[in-house]
Length: 331
Image (tube, rainbow, N blue to C red; front, side, top):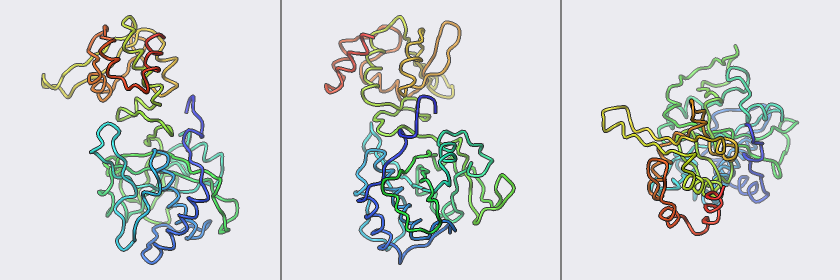
């Protein structure tokens, strides 16, 4: 996680969240069917952490966690959360949240930074066989999170003041490639049959990042950074070339969208802020491939090539962020 730290990916647990989670566990207990049993945390505490994971995940992505408290638990829930697409509010993504505990801060840091090997202990995230076979089709994404495990087993541990961390998420379509197993990749056995998802495949965006584009989160930044970036794109023809090839009209695989950058400005300034460019070739310092972004640029008045109509684009910039746009034009 270059240029990052754990504070970008965590939510602090409040007393109100904890009290609500305890209440929901009591309400749901008659209908509860646990999938994994743990020897280091009693079942009630584990279920509380599950609710706190859902509340935290909603908060992380800018939603009110209280909106996801159910009226009753007569029927099993098909999903935990629904997140609306930021640019097409009619489209929703069904989310399942899975929360675990990790036994040490060093291990937590290793998992969060993806420095852990997928094939070593704690290198994979688990989904129980029952959920894999019966529930996976209900979700679009599964998001994995964690807490730092309490020191003593089965205590009356309270996570108030501690943090829930977002490890990352993966589309359910990608999970379907996995097979159910009881065997770990490091020569032991799981307590229950499950699929074990590689941590290296998980993706996430930073907390409170308002703008995201691309399947690989090529754009994952604040509104302020994004509009400054738009301003830079709109007024630096010597550095920028927007390329949009409609390959599908010629029978090719699909449209290709990219922006070429001649100088190292974007790589040095914007990359650490969430604009993920990749290395270029020859006279191209770096490039940004993202169909979703290019489509959005066209809606704002951008066009293919180097020269942009700055006045037209600026008219389409939200007034609250015009200051940042203007900053970008002057960089």
